[in-house]
Amino acid sequence: MTIPVDKLSDPAVRTFVAALNANDEQAFFAALAPDATMSDDGSDRDVREWTDKEIFSSRGHMDVQSEKDGGLTLVANYRNDTWGEMRTAWRFVVEGGKIARFETGQA
Picture 1 (spheres, helix red, strand yellow):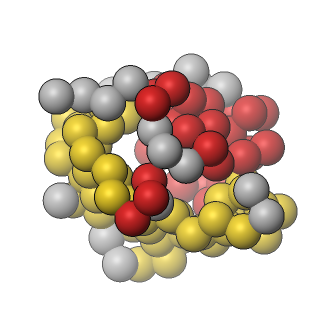
Picture 2 (cartoon, helix red, strand yellow):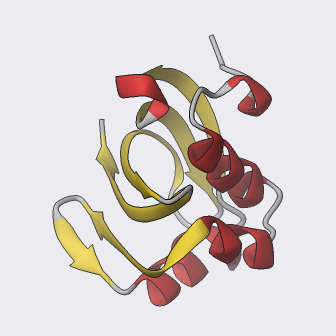
């Protein structure tokens, strides 16, 4: 069962997912801390390069299936035009109301 974005527990994560699903690059980067970092399948990546390829140019979309740790850990069906759909895990570090780090990978 999918959790509606507006029902996600953590406000920063909610903003992140809403911006991602709307393909709103400006709102997405506004949700991140200025020096935010990320990893994909355990390897650190450049946030701007990765998000351009995996989210914005390929129309990424998250359907959140579950959350835990107060909304900082999600399991979602993630799809984009490059890879199709896959079950993914997302972990977030929030500082000062912004996403300071996110880690994703196959679940």
